[in-house]
Amino acid sequence: MKIVFITKQYPSNIGGIEKVIENFRQSFSSKGHEVFVLNQNGLTKNLFEFNSKNSSFGIKLFFELLKLNPEIVHFHGFRIINFFPWLACKLKGIPCVITPHFDYNTSLFREKVNFFFHKLMNFNKVLAITLREKKILESLGFKKIEVIPDSVDTLKFSPLGEKNSFRKKFGIPKKDFLVLFLGRLASNKGIPYLIDAFNGIKTDKKKLLIVGKENPAFFDTTYKYYASIAKKLGVLDKTIFAKQLMDDEVVEAINSSDVLVLPSTASEAFGLVLIEAMACSKPVIGSSIEGINEVIIDGFNGFLVPPKKSIELTLALEMLQDNNLRQKMGKNGLILVKQKYSLMAVSEAHIRIYLELVH
Picture 1: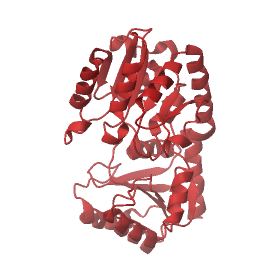
Picture 2: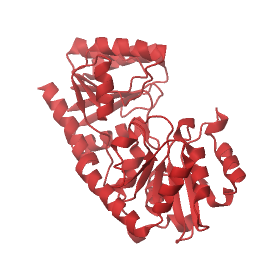
Picture 3: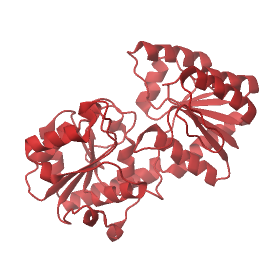
Picture 4: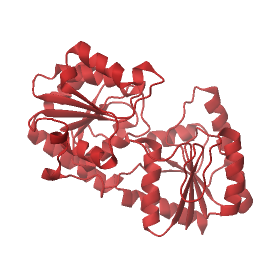
């Protein structure tokens, strides 16, 4: 089957839509499907290189899709108006699927315009990644919605055991309690609350590892800003900033940690890093907000804590200093991943939908 993905950005980064697309590209390609990823920022799979943006990007896609003539087109995200490529699909009779990835803000006028156009497009299938997203999409007037969660490649993200040398590489003592944050350094990720909570842990044998991509355009999304908070709280010497890690190093970082924390202050589309940590048999802590609360079962594979509540987060972290509890929750999380979130199972669900639409 010839499959085209259309998205705003590509290739992949830590977390997010781009990583999901890259996982599917690799999975579908390994099964013999032809996969092309088209985006407005330049790099694409196999054939095309676009440097244009916005409407000119859509017009170029219109003609490229007419030439390529795929069997299915899968749009990812609402942040670009997909009218021109959608029109190409309609002219050629190509089924269209869209996964919004909760990539929208219902209060913004620009997003309302996007909703209006996307509803008019009447996609053959709309894929929600959570039940909450399905309900919101239904309330906005979208039809033909099915829930398929995000996935994790369990061949890549898995327990490493004693093979891991990450702690030695970064000078982290083997017995130190290692807390990990993994993701974009965005203002809605709640990193200051994590640093504050980390400071409250009643042990001197601890380290906080912050891994992710900063955004120098804003002061509060830089390593310098978070370092200043750690310094003010007196834990800068126990905080490690790993600005950019290779994919295999990310897996090693997760395996080296004792717990991964996603302390977001606003709703998450899903929280991909959570299932990546669970696939490595690690317990997870996240804010009790929509998106995250569909992945973490409080007390089973980790803990849910109220957003912006450093004291409650500290208490959850201190509970996970218990090695037996960490192992139990880590095993539970791994079971959940195998049951619901493995790339193989989620890929098969996508292919099933594609085949239903094509035939």
